[in-house]
Length: 299
Image (cartoon, rainbow, N blue to C red; front, side, top):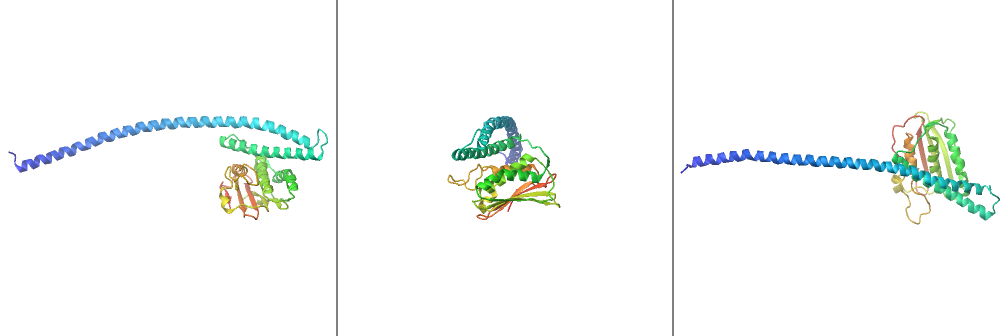
C-alpha cells in the first residue's frame, strides 16, 4: 500500500501534467478563433469592395441622370420663358390690360420655376462633382449692377426702396462671374421676398486691404430670422417656416447653394439678423486665393 508521501507526490505530478496540458488546449482554441477571425475579415473586405463598386456605379448613374435632366428640364423651360418674354414685350401684337397682367404672371412664375430647377440641378451636380467653375478676372461693380438691375422690377412692384453702395477701391476678383451672379441673385431675391411693402433693401461692397478680401453685403429691413433658426439656415431644404400655411415659397436650397459656391471661391458667407428687425448677409471673398478657412460664420 503506497505511503501518504508517495500519494502526495503522485497528486503533485498529476497537477503538473494537467497544468502543462491546459495551455496547449488554449493555444489550439486561440488559433482556431484567429483563423475564424481572419476568414470573417476577408469576407468583410470582399463586402466592402463590392459596396464600393456599387457606390461608384451609383455616383456615375447620378451624374448621368443630372446631366440628362439638366437638358430635359431647361430646354422646354427656356422656350416658355422666351415666348412669355416676347408676349410681354408685345412682339406679337398689342395686349389689353388683362392680357398683359396674365402674361406678366406667366413670365414671373416661369422665372421662379427656372431658379428652383437650377438650384436642384446645381445641388445634384455639386454632389456628383460635375458642376463646372470657370475662374477669371471679374469686375465686382459690374456684376452687382447686373443683378440689381435684374431685380429692380421686383422691388418696384413691392414698393421697396432698393439702395446700392459701391466702394470705389474694390479691385477685380479671381472668380466665376456666373456663379457670383447666382450667389448675389439668391441673396437679393431672399431680401426682397422677406421684406414687406414699403421697406428697404440694399447692396454694398467693401474692400479690406489688410486681408485682401472683398465683402458684399445684402441687407434688408424685413422680417428677420429667429435666433433658434440661425444654426440651420444654410442647410439644404431647410425652411424657417416649414408649415403648409407659410407665406413665402421656395425649396430651401438657395442659401445652401450660396454657401457651397462661396466656399468653392475660397470664401465664406455670414449672416446677422434679429427677428422683426431685418437681416444682413455678408459674402466675403478673397481677391486672389483663399481666406484660409471655409467655416460658415453666423452671428
